[in-house]
Amino acid sequence: MLDRDGPVPIYVQIADAIQEQIVGGRLRAGEAVPSEAALEARFGVARSTARNVVRELRERRLVHTVQGEGTFVGPVGIPRIRPKRALYLDIAHDIAAKIRCGKFRPNCSISSDTTLMLRHGVAKVTVRKAIAHLREQGWVFTVPYRGTFVNEPGKWPSREGAR
Image 1 (tube, rainbow, N blue to C red):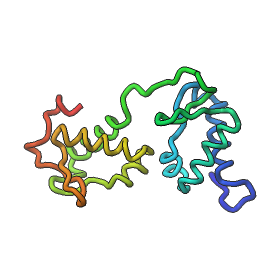
Image 2 (cartoon, helix red, strand yellow; image 1 turned 30 degrees about the vertical axis):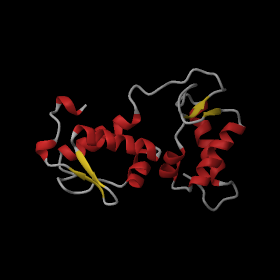
Image 3 (cartoon, helix red, strand yellow; image 1 turned 180 degrees about the horizontal axis):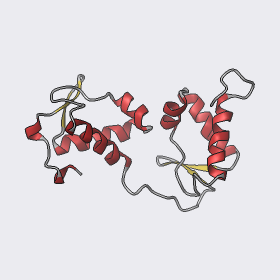
Image 4 (cartoon, rainbow, N blue to C red; image 1 turned 90 degrees about the horizontal axis):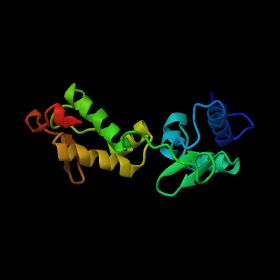
């Protein structure tokens, strides 16, 4: 639990929590640490605070950042552990499951990019890639400047093609 009124800055408290995960082995060498968006969502902090967390972890020499890929546990050059499946596919699968079970109904909009970014702790480009994947499969359609909406069930892919 963060002490928002205490003398220790929030970003230091969050960095301490992540350091505990690293030292305790819950985050292993080469594994990605939570993204800035994930830190924002998880701790309810501003993007600048999330950036300060990552900077603090780098200054402690616990992590390194690879431009365009993320921040990883350990020193530069350590082999990175890649997720088994791309994050955008996980997000697309989650949305497709919500469509299939009726949480998102035909012709109704799905969550906004910002909501999806915060929910999944990812960058906008990842969310947009997930939406593009859903569009390609037939789950959704996008109306410029209006949003993304659920297609009619007849346009959805078969269960086997929904992977």
